[in-house]
Image 1: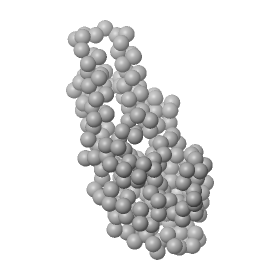
Image 2: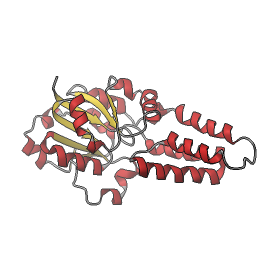
Image 3: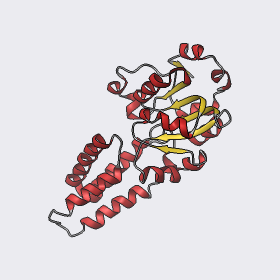
Image 4: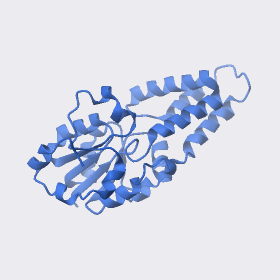
Length: 243
């Protein structure tokens, strides 16, 4: 059944402070593996992200494990340390990294339409993150995990057909790409959170979002009814307005 309105919500640095997770992981890697192997992990991580188009923390750890298995083990404890890192990722307290009022935002948006998580990532740690943070239950299990969200819009439409979509994402490039495809069927909201949203290089060349907010929690107090009832021409004319 076609919905009138569907809210598509990114996760990392939109609803959840992914930068904080990365900082904690860096510290844990340094402590467990030492500086040399920690640096090797991040080189593998960057190469894998370039290959896949999304981050895969566990996949990078698996590749590091494969490389470490053919190297001399100075202390005989490398295997245990790598398993410790895996446990750190899987058991990380993601609920403590939700941005203030993130769950309130989902509940508030649900008054106006269907809420759906649309996130990129792997199929192990990313759903684990969603469940441990409470985001999975908050959207009733309506979760789409993919690479290159802007290339998956047909899949979104099949799973969650709607008259109009709203995308909330900290990556202006993604909002720009989706807007160029869906045009007036999409309203974009850009929360200026996290390193991507504040990096001039990431913003360069992108058209402004329809609306910009400083913190995701602002949406919990926003009356969206008037906005979402505007004709498409009015919405397009309101680009770059702060909610």
